[in-house]
Length: 204
Image (cartoon, rainbow, N blue to C red):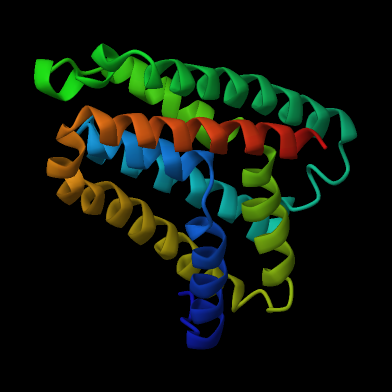
């Protein structure tokens, strides 16, 4: 039976929360889909599970994966650049096409397959995800012994689940504000800027 240790649990929770809450492409995607009420639970659970899996990889010995593979890191960087650049372009395009912002009124929702694909892309085509969850959390967890690391991992994973579900369902309360096309234009412009800034940052 694995013993539970409070200090590493709290440090894992705090470190993970600090990394996840930072504004990024994945959070922007979750926020927008939540405002549109597009499969909120599915997106939140997928993001949480992916983050948890990467955290476990980092904590239990795979933190050196990207550090020792320049080719893999390069592929991840340019894959993320292309994906985020394209998504940013689509966001800017929506600013000038109001009809694209009325999905909630028409009750048109993307298919589960499309939502899963987008969620996987936003979660996995960003090298910062690996650097934060695998490398950084893996490095922080190395200060604890083998008996304490599981508690650190639990805390880090719990922070991820709490954040994505809070972001997803908390955003739903902002729905009335985003019934106005102007609000969507502003959000799409901000998201577009954010995507392009992140895309540029990951290849510099």
